[in-house]
Image (cartoon, rainbow, N blue to C red; front, side, top):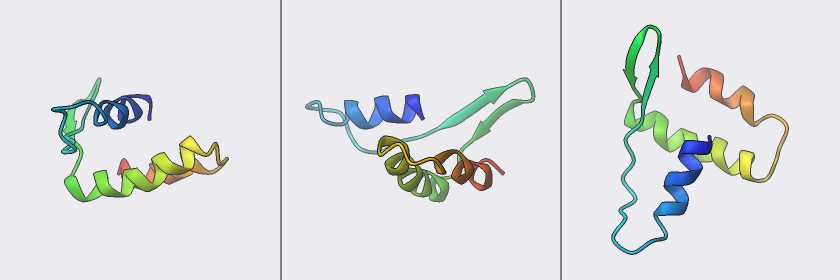
Length: 64
């Protein structure tokens, strides 16, 4: 969420677009985050910003 927040904040700067590509790197390799799940991530991000307790549980289905 911290990386996603940094991207959202950077979008406020002139010349930074709003298109976001996300890849997750771990010991199993690199996983490209599907575009439809990126739009779902925005909803989770909004909960995270508001400090809602259930934001983390929203990530589980997005990462599968």
